[in-house]
Image: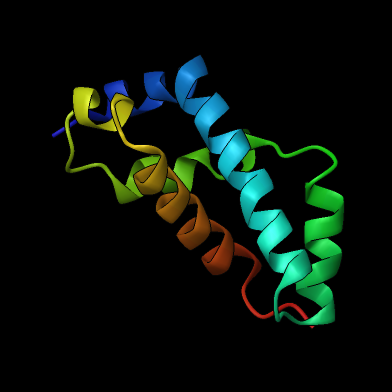
Length: 96
């Protein structure tokens, strides 16, 4: 289990940020191409221009607080994508 200090330090991990930024762009494209409200599609069109991991990293780190630092850092692309998808879905919700 990662300590709060370790979770705080992970927010600056460039590899994790790079994975999350890519996952955000993938989620944006999925929202734009898929079924979503106009508000969700508007969010995705803006977010894909500058996919910023810092907006979602706290949500993802908190969701994985029971994991070790090593497990968080070695997360697969699929795991990162699922975490980012959940973060975005919970944060932007049902924008109308």
